[in-house]
Image (cartoon, rainbow, N blue to C red):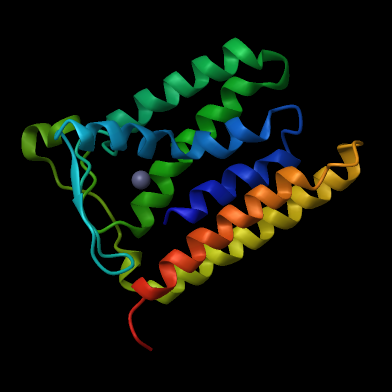
Length: 187
Ligand SMILES: [Zn+2]
C-alpha cells in the first residue's frame, strides 16, 4: 500500500478545500518520508520482493509510538500554517491514517515501541497476502481520489489551467500502478 496513502490525501481536498493539495498529498506519507532517510543512514532498511512482499525494517518510523509522534509533528505543521482551516487535525489525521492502513496490510513488521523495545509482539494483519485484493483496493482509491480532485478543480479553480494539478496527480497515479503490475503474482 503506497498508492493508497497518496490517494487518501488527494481525496481529502474535497473535504478540506482550503488546504493546498501538495500538503494533503504528502501528509499521509510522512511516515514513509521519515523511512527514506533512516534507510539512507542504515537505521531502517528494505529488500524489494514481489508486490506486498517487500522485507521491511521499519522499527522506528512505523512503530505505534513513532507514528503518534509523527502525527504530533503533522499537527504542529498544520496548526502553524493552516490554523483557520483546521490544518492541525487534518494533517495529523492523514499522517496517522498511514499507520492504520499499514496495520491492515503489513506482515508482522510494525512494533509498538520504537526499535521494538521490550520485544513486544509485532503488529500487522497481513492483508498483503491477498495481493490482488490490496492492489484493486489501491487502484479504486486512486480513481475515487482523482475523480474527487478533478470535480473540485473544475468547480473551484477558476483559471483556464485548472486541469494541471489533476493531470499531474493522475499521471503520478498511473506511473505507480504501471510500476506495480509486473510485481504482482501470475494469475
Ligand atoms: Zn509505510
